[in-house]
Image 1: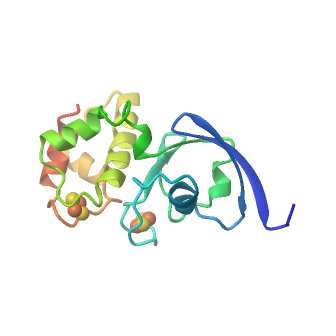
Image 2: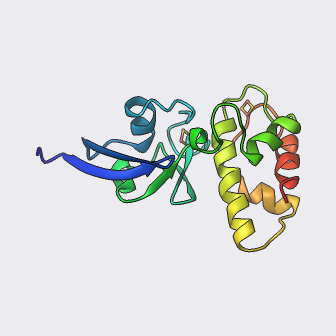
Length: 159
Ligand code: FES
Ligand code: FES
């Protein structure tokens, strides 16, 4: 094997995946270009906007800054893995729809993944967050359209 290639084995949305990739390959490129999961959106590509957010072992990360080789042995969840298929929505997605928290939608998949991680952590801690804590929890994700109020309403309704 060439020196700059590495083999990784991980699960993505519950399915085992094995690939040989360049060591410098970014997770967003593996997800979108190799695995053809286009729900994860490229934005700033500098770790500032959160549109590329996915979960790795349940923690939200910016896939534009994360080397794909680091998912070896781990579990990756993208927005496609949240719901039970095209006909059903996760509770976070449902709440976003019900509260009108989606406009152009470009930030939405990353926002949903960040909310999912925040929600899971709050449930683990048996904690009901207030609006300030919700804002703090989502500070890594930028939305240019909604003004955030409806997104925060959507998150608040989950608890
Ligand atoms: S595209 Fe990754 S943080 Fe903006
Ligand atoms: S809905 Fe357009 S950027 Fe958030």
